[in-house]
Image (cartoon, rainbow, N blue to C red; front, side):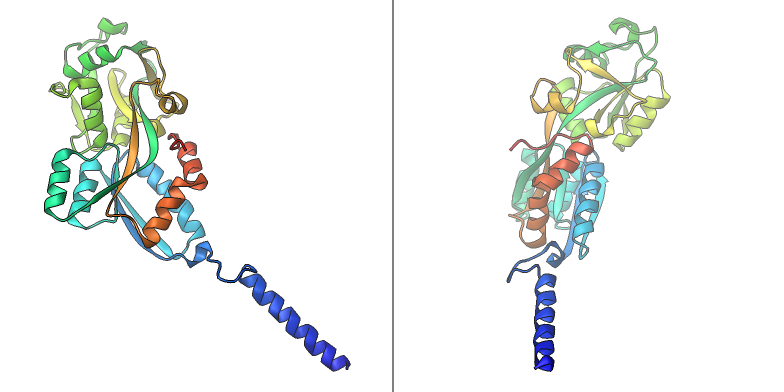
Length: 284
């Protein structure tokens, strides 16, 4: 009898351990069951955010491999059309001409807003200018105002910094500030990355540039626009005039591991990371 009771107890213990290893619920799928690869390319503004999401997701889903490349929104959209990536990160909406090209190639853009952002206008900390109107900012970038003394600064020529034309931030800033039917000053220095603008602005007392909220550092001075400072709160409530959505585009509705990843980004964990990195969570 003692032997029989010992055998019975051992079987129960083994069964309990097995159930515990399965989460105690039949048919439940854990994060570790997710596997596959996802290729993402596009907006440089979103590179830090995309890498933050990737690292956190892969930590709890070790069988998923996510690759992130920048290069600008236009580059990412072209990659979706060409079928070389799964998602395009975009800091602007897809253009009409891109939609026409996509339709001709059999690509069906599906847009998902994954976060919001504000475009902060930044200068060197030594610059005395505190704020500009949106009109003054446009005049500066069109080359109509060329000296800091005309807007309350020192007697020095303004050095204009901008992203290059492949950037969604470039396109957004052109429409919102420079003017849709107007052009950037020929003196504008076009840079291939947002980090390039950060570095140049920190190094040049006469520079002015624009970056996403996630790229603001203590050694940059943020200029108020129309009396409002760029921040998560002012971008979320719309009081800051240079606010926008950030998007992920896919070819058709995402399925499988792509769907799982996108849902995670839009969930509390993904949106918390957006906030931590200086971006604005999508309002629910």
